[in-house]
Length: 309
Length: 291
Image 1 (cartoon, rainbow over the protein chains, first blue to last red):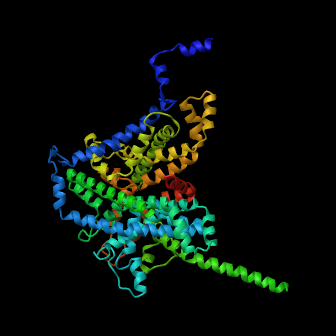
Image 2: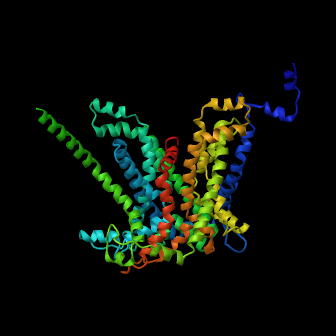
Image 3: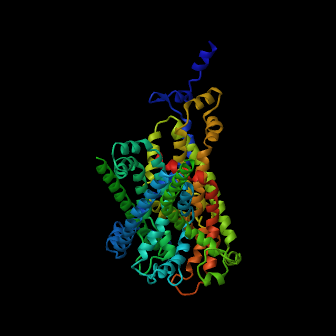
């Protein structure tokens, strides 16, 4: 009897709250306390700045003095700016090399390691290692490899009779060189994701197909590749996003040169925002960068959907 | 007769060995090539200038620490190292606390808004961090926290990755564990602290390693908020060594120092990776399969 009385007695707001149900189960109000600390930081550091950034892009905003509302002026200026087609073009060219290059090497190595177990550990280590070092490390190592007179690459090529090239100092090679460095650093990460995807595919499927008379090549196209689509899609999306954000290697290796031939979107944002302190214009450029990335990732998702239909 | 079968066996074994060898050779060569730039960094960093200039030799015949001493003398490398360590350790600790609490609530607790909050966090990943860099920079200037640990540590704490990692881990958790804990009289926080968190050790390790590495290597943000030399992190500070010789003059002076400088940046994460490789791979895999 006392038991029943206990339950009925406290009829304050707290107990009423604890009896509220959501989708048939009692609401766990403590959950909001669990989430609160991260939510606050996320709102202050990520959510609000996104909206504040859009607001800034409609202003002329310097490092000193008061900001001034200029409406669409920053975007209008961007449309007429000669640098915009240049840096967007450079970035597209790098993405066009880096995305397929990284995905292809990562896929080939993943397929191979997955097939044979022997040595797969050390090979995975070798490919992943460049991914764990800072961009400063990558950039400075490769500056010296690409160096014109005594760099390793030119020495090696000179040995087989190819004349020395200014890999980072001529407009002819600079985009390829930066892309190569980017691929070198990125492959290991994507290889591991693809390997995880491959491990999910039962080996019997491929074997059964081969027994049924399919060639290894057909088995790959008909079975492995379609089943790998989710992992592959993730890898491509991540690579598109990171290719459009290339900055460190350009900032450190060429400073955007020669003559702006390696300047990327983010290096231009950096230059306008944090060298010339035109923060409003830089915010407008960031918004355009976001729209570009959004467009390409949506396009990718669309392509995959059509392909699988 | 027995002689014959033995030689057949021998031939088969050696044939298989040759076949394996042929299959593996190109891969091994590519892997060695991939590793070569990092090896070359270490190699050059311990070679005396005389040998660096003499040409390419794969194994240094003479070892010197001179370049490392020059780097330590020329730059405030100790201070940069401390900045990097303090920042990375604080971000790891903070992220793990925030991420585990939030991830636990999103995976195991029942409340309105759970799905919406999760999708909000996931879709924020589609927005490049560059979008918030200008407003955050303005915020840092207004609060006058440039050149401080606050500006280095707080923004990276908003990373969604640890939340996601823990959520995925806690989702795979058997329901019975919590029920048992509840019967034993554990509160929600008690269940979290005494049951869930200890069992989430693999997620914690993988998260700690990946968060540490990405913060140690972080470049653009620390570059923006460190105005004074003594507030640079190691990767930003060592960018100093790019000034040497881009134009391709024929001298190789400074090569040894540059390689020693970047080796100082690279070695902590490389050693970390070699020892804890399993957890690196596990962390990335978590992102991959369940993504």
